[in-house]
Image (cartoon, rainbow, N blue to C red; front, side):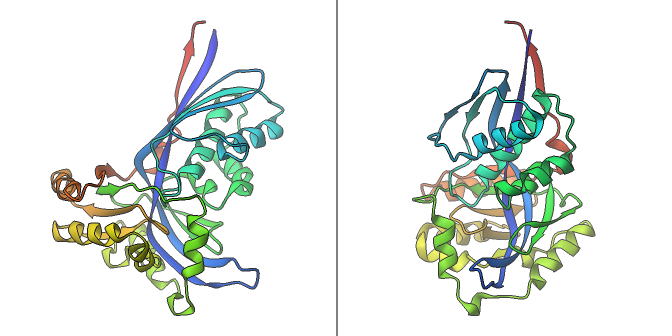
Length: 295
């Protein structure tokens, strides 16, 4: 009898994203509210003699975050073997944190498979070396990230919303770095918009005016369809619409599934793959679909 574990790796959006300034080492200080959503990659884990990854929808390279996360937890626990399959649904370099989501799901899944007993807090601390968004992917739900994105403060789950999500893949994986190079001092803000959104969420509401990304105008310049799509979402009743992170993926928030479906129909007329998604609360992610499979 061989035990296997399956985990959903949920994408994230940036409900708000501000660039505060640039440090002397070239890194940027940011303030952002992160939210997991129902678009997800699917990962399965089973015992093996070595770490093996098979991924449908993405080429596997040695620096893949799934492999890095598996080796990281293996070193911490003394385990060194697993067979991993990944069904990729989150676009690569789209502003939806797909790589980080996969890394966080790998840590949670292997923690269960290997019966390591690490808490979510321990896994998040371990994951910090993998990237700024990975600790959030371990925790999930809603959070405020500051500093260079590594200072994480968990928030209560944001009020439920339906979304029209347009997941787009950038032309190359260096997209975020290139977008940061476009940021000018005039784009720097003080983080108050993001702080207002975090406060509103802690009070059980959303501050729609705060749903925005510093990168929006640069994303529109680079991908003209983003600007057109955002205008369409607002015209059909989106309470707020923005790119996620540095783009090019973008979204609109709606008060019902019916209005979101109407938004999908309008955006689809642009030839874009729009879909209805929803916020995923933090308490959903630890629910692993584990099964014992007879071999």
